[in-house]
Image 1 (cartoon, rainbow, N blue to C red):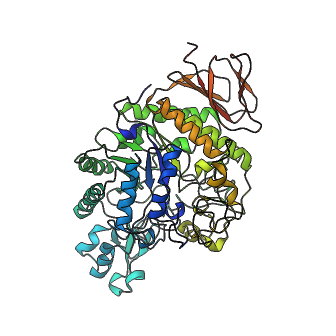
Image 2 (cartoon, one colour):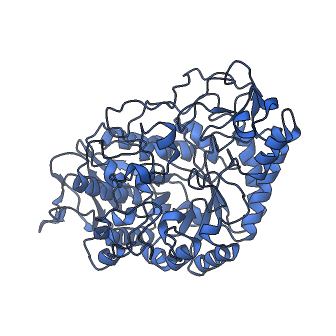
Image 3 (cartoon, rainbow, N blue to C red):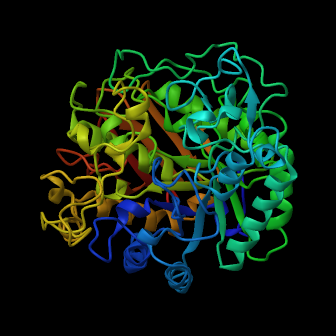
Length: 569
């Protein structure tokens, strides 16, 4: 099976590096990452071997949800810099051959957005309120929808205006109450976002990551959720971070109407040269439904969360890779691979738990501790396994350092609204957002000259610093560099996927002449292949290794190996 060819656009086989601007690099010593800080580290990313960067939101925002509550879609938050800083960053990235993707947040705005403030001031039944979803109900919330961040998805308007005219009026927010949902049936909303794309593409932006892409359109009439108000309720977990499983369906998710929105966006992008792209953050359980978002006239990519959520289990991982790959192939789209992001615990920590543990919304001090060594070994193994596949790979800042989730954040330092809206039942996502360690200096670890960073860095953070890893050939950083260099050299991103039969608990596939195998079991496996070992994921002790007999290549548990078979076929 193949999905792209040498004439494919840049994004079809790109390695894209997610930058969480607040946590990447601070240039002015205020303890908050910024755009000049990003610019100062672009050479590092070029050396790492990535093709593009994706920046999480940097717009003006009250930062109640770390920038995903946007107050102005065409400006830069002062703590991140200026528009000139943004333009300099884009220019420098392009000079280095790096593409630039930014976050678009279309499901909701901040309550501080001019439109929402106008809506509050205008009063009930006003045209200004039609841009959002306001409803009258004198019997409580208009329906039983729950918020993804906990609690009800509805808040009373008079709690914001204090006006008696707003008694029994409510507004919808699928996330925090500070994030009112747009009414995507309103032409002003559609027009505003089409203008948004043109504005940023005129600034040189190459692509857009679409936040909550599956939620823009709600079912007509806003009927009750059949699952009930506890769809997103947090339970007492049986495993760290576990929440009540909820299918990604319902009257507010994956409605067919979203596709007309994305077709209109695609038409805007097609006005511009340079293969501009859209990638969907769409939590859609059915791979065939998810593939609808990447049909030829809609988006170019969608994140592969099904693979990201796979357990350390050979059958499950193979099934998820195969079903997503085949669903995308059916519509002529490339498949993406991703293991970590700003919303999920880092995979170097997730894979430190026993198979079957459901780590979803954050891990804290009161949860069982993972096996950190095992987690890192497995994380590097699964990442290199995915890097050998055709398609596009997304990396989250710091994963190349082997960073774990920070579990010992003090409660009074937490910022995630899920922590507050669930009354502390879930610790939220702060643990994967701690500012990166660039040096061993405990006063900011090279991220900032200010030791008081926006989220506190743990005292042990320096052992993961770029400063140390650069000169350690056995480091996670240098492993990522080698893997990315080989991936590009061998053109694996534009290759083919052909599964091979393998021993139980082992996965093996070919991509052209390269054979990739991963051992998810507990015993050493002998691979009966003749060839040259190009790459093996780090181990302790060092293995797999090749013996004097070139037909005996051993694959130890929790590791991945790449073998070049081109000279032996």
